[in-house]
Image 1 (cartoon, rainbow, N blue to C red):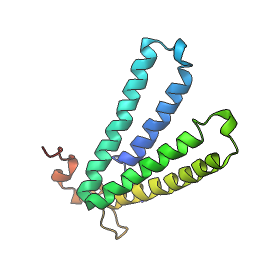
Image 2 (image 1 turned 30 degrees about the vertical axis):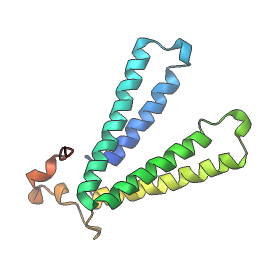
Image 3 (image 1 turned 135 degrees about the vertical axis):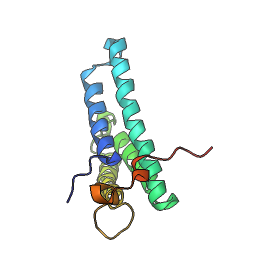
Image 4 (image 1 turned 180 degrees about the vertical axis):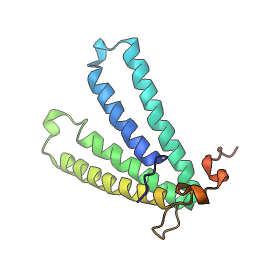
Amino acid sequence: MKKNADSFVVNGLLAGAVLYWVIDLSGTEPGRTFIDYAVIGLVASAVLWNIVNLGLRLHRIGGGREVWHLQRTLLFVAIGLMNTVFARPEQTGTWRFWVGGAMLVLAAADVVALYRVEWRGGRGDGGDRTGTDPANRDPADDHVPALPR
């Protein structure tokens, strides 16, 4: 299996982990400085950049069905994080906490499925993407198309 260096799924996950780390290191709300907010904004924009470009790539690969896959994954992540990581201490151990954990497990499975769709290029045959082999590389595949107006 070849390494997929231009994967928006992997880059988005890494940027999300860095965002969590930056927010954790910046401390609480009253102690944050302008630099903290600038770094958080920069990393959050990197996460958003990867999500938007992943949506464009998935739309090019499989149309609306694949974009719905991305939206469903983001919904699972949001619900899961709200009910686990961002839950109040008194909510720990309630049914909402367990539902949030289940949503995070579903989100992890969806992320793996999204990566496989992106890696295969939507062909479904399990082979290498056309862009990974330099001999078969098509220069038209090197950019993500602009949004329609």
